[in-house]
Image (cartoon, helix red, strand yellow):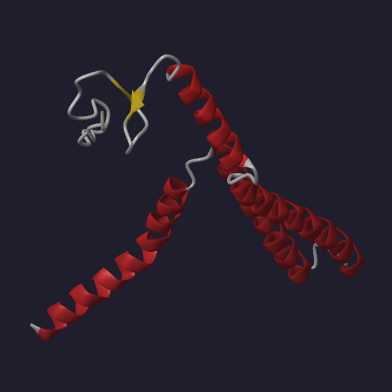
Length: 147
């Protein structure tokens, strides 16, 4: 009985260790929905794999030290450039000035849609019709104006 439990536990551990990289790689792919960012991450992984392969080739004697140094330096510079692109892209997703541009566009839209409207909702800014007791957009109660 004990032998059966130990062998089952060992089998579970081995399966976990074998399947964990597959699960993790799928989870990382799911997190990168942006195609530009996914492409940059793929380039980074390709360059990292090339660097690892060059190091392995140097250890077995396929590269001389001079060639290894030259190619390794080029690959590391390319990888650093890709990492800088990833950082710049991720920071650029939230562009400085984007909030101001959005607010300006919203203000322009509101000014166009409010021409000729005497009352607006105090909560969402939607135009109100005479006699409205609640906002048709957000449902907020309409304050009665003093007459």
